[in-house]
Image (cartoon, rainbow, N blue to C red; front, side):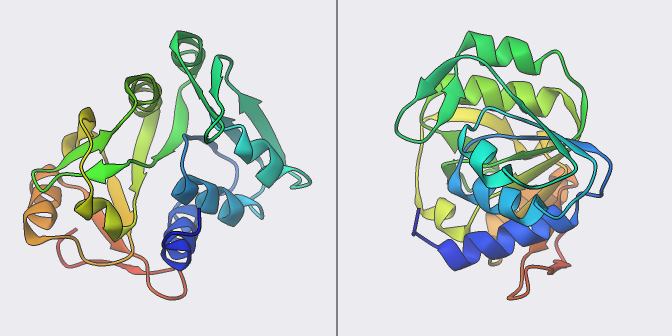
Length: 194
């Protein structure tokens, strides 16, 4: 949770700035997602659908939000609700925005995770959103994971804290992904590559 916390806060603020009041949004699991949720607390008239039980506490006392929590198996380590029940529940919706995180980013543009059950939920979230935002700190380029969530062609915007490796930036450009580098304020500007 404490790893790259300042960077995750900047990313969360930038992602939240891309989401208007009065819309629906799906958020999955992860500490960067939780920072985006903190940044969304002041938004009004949001419908938030999530498989992350930690978001219930984050949004507690935040007016103007309807919080919808999936059913399924709770992974005790991080509060993720995973499994077939969560996937089926998510498929009942079509939302304006999806915000997902990942455990690792491959130089070829693959977005990766460790748990196949969590990946199934992330895929369902992406498949049921009009606009899809990936949020990951730059440390994810130094990690490897074996389960593929998707490729960049299934993402509309990537919000991170530092310029990605050139091969990943090129993959973003080829896929038409808006590459957003969150500055110290969390606002940021699209990079020249996105």
